[in-house]
Image (cartoon, rainbow, N blue to C red; front, side, top):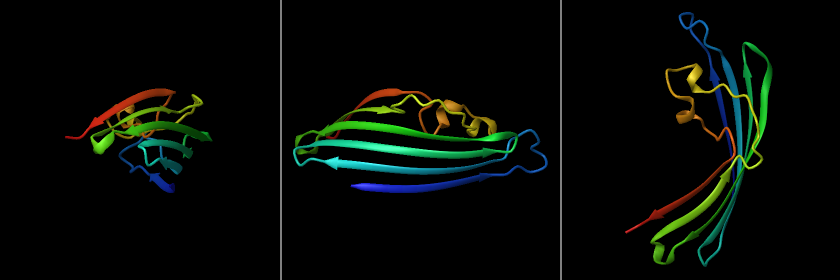
Length: 125
């Protein structure tokens, strides 16, 4: 299965929010998934980000790669999955929500700022 998605974000400030940067961000995500009838599955995803920030003359352009492999347990009792986000450990400069709101950047980051290896177990009863 292949998927492609595009998101556009344009953040403009009002006069009373001086010091908050205006940003324009384009997200292009592609994903390929393979599901084997025996329960094994593979995932490969890429995310291209282009962001322009009003106070920064250079725009941010970067590509992130995510990999995943998993197994669906018999009788659909659950899923075991292993994956790597930001496989190439791509460095990037992204202006996230923390500059625009009073939130924690790590909690609202739409992607991993460094290589992240994870495992996940989901059980269904």
